[in-house]
Length: 293
Image (cartoon, rainbow, N blue to C red; front, side):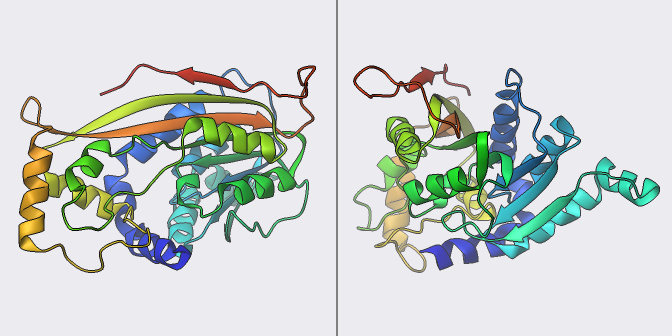
């Protein structure tokens, strides 16, 4: 599975940003979540940095921080490095040769971080955690590399993501066509079990619209978001199955557009001992936002 994910994003890297409207928008919203957070990190981990869009937001917000961009696909890291070379920070470095903070690309797996214990003040992950095989292991690894009092902030997809495509493809050919994503409440529990404290979880729905189903599937292919589950179809869908899928999806058409709904889960927590209730339980705060179209 991991090889399939890496291969998919390797292929998508060159054209990823052309179709990554949603990914960029979610990164901006995740960045907005930092507005009221009091932290001045010196070293930040961007876990699953992709082409470096989120890295640029982090460097703009925390201009004195070094950022390590980690990704499973080295082709994505090449794009991230190129983006950073064109940034104002690298231009300052070239001109002044001063102590301008670094961007360091690093090829690695979130489930087994090639990083030292307690080496980061902050970890950020925008729409990467939905691809890991073991969320609990990933959280434990991020907790391990954070210093005491370090912040972990992330965005991921929830189970209602691409609900229209999931329903339309159900029973079409006996294969999975949409990944399964983890519920916000289970993510919050996993944070606590990994040793994080004071987790806050928030969810919103964002709906993109398309002229037709092929346009949606082209976007999914362009960002490397292929189905990587066991039992997925290898190769092209048969003609009759494809026609049935298109008919099923047409039932969702509104105002001459086809919707594609994404459930986006935001979370943040701290790597320090939490204050617990008398019975030992820890409080997890859950919030819902109004759907956005």
